[in-house]
Image 1 (cartoon, rainbow, N blue to C red):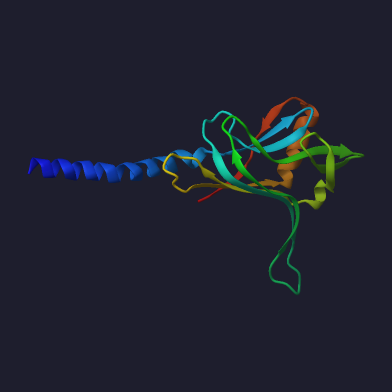
Image 2: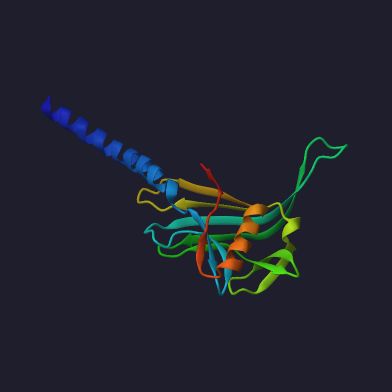
Length: 192
């Protein structure tokens, strides 16, 4: 009888360990791959998937950044419409521990009193330019899978929305303090 109890305990532990590991990974992965927005004097703004201080690998990254303009309702339409311009639509196989993945690079400038958002490459080269007044908000989505020993499908997904008012605040902030700094992201939506 003692042998049977020992076998049952061993079998239950063998079956429970992966379940406990999976639940632990899901709980600890809630903060993995969080987005951050940084301003670097030489390069401008960079929205990144943060992995630099972590020791975890992300696989199968997919990310998309776009500008959205809300077209309000009209007499003939009872719903507003979203007009989008895709800035970045990309995939990467993995993100190694100790690196950040840049999902959007941009500059904010004021020229002749008019504020602009300029999408740049990673070396500050201009890709496209938009008047800030023509933008309602930036939307950046990304998904990835968290690496783990048992190959459980632990999913990480985020949506970052940066409203026009926040972009104007960032521009004012760098005009008064042109130093490397982290910018607060007000709207981060976790996708599970």
